[in-house]
Length: 483
Image: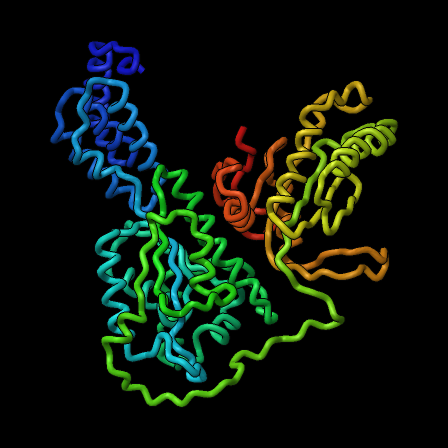
């Protein structure tokens, strides 16, 4: 602070004291080393500053948030003081390169027209190696299908870098993913897939079965796009999209690489390895027979119900259980009524809407409609004078949002639309650990919302929170509307 208000003498005095203290204690954790680097920088001892920052970053490895805090501090020093920050320090602390990856699978034996034949595998891997060397990614988002995905991950792992974060997303259960996206290419590809999962723990869009729902592939693509962008915004950088695809193939298969690419917002950060060019330079030594058969049996869902991606809300009024009995009518006909009036003004109404005591449950078809619904409810709770309505002054709410595949159908008892499934349960387990007055969202919801609406909303990373009733953990964001 002394430095930023222009008190150079005091700032140098403090810097010397900090250096003496840290060296005396022999502290070598990240923040001690980063603080040491800044102190040396303030004293003009640039080489010592560079050395301290270098050691700090090596200690921190994939804790990019902490490194980014130091980068932000250095940028403030560079902008608002007369201190010259060495380029070496900026390079050490610079934001990590982030890549969202998608690419074609190796050709299925039944494919009529070759697109990614097995004989160009080594050439594709060579090109991937060149791009990885050029960009030096530190954070990547990808799936793990046979062909491009597995080649990409294998090439990354061969770098032997302990400061690289590899996020592998599977759209549904591992066994079903192997059936849909790996095993048709042969046992060796399945072995390579399992070897990757032994080294990188996968993240699941849903841990349940495929059920023939191709929407899950598209949703996984949106997740990788949205999270890579939200993460890059937090780290003051811009992500790359790296694709392996046939640029001469004008068809845009639903949930395919070209479909995912069409939703990428930054034209200046797209890198494409065009396999049509590679294929032209290679001789086809393949003797594969071509057929036209469906290679994945789609599991039927009984009773004619649908399984679709939905955007889910669970909300709970804080302090409801402590309300006096005489306040109950006011809760129903004041609080719930004013919320109902707010909901009725929305253009898009929820697909499912229900209440249980003080809990509100809703689903929508789009993330953007759901967030507006949640904001309306939260604004009503925060801005209403509840004492005037005979309710506790500190009446508040917790709102949790999630997204995932759910079963939709008519409830046999109520005869109304309802939704069921593990992702309904996950949203319900997020709500009790949500901060009062805030809207918490899973990374699945946050990513989908960003793909729909871009930077209309602010995403603050909360962390990997433990869910209620031992339901596991969830990467979570707090979402507010940009004013």
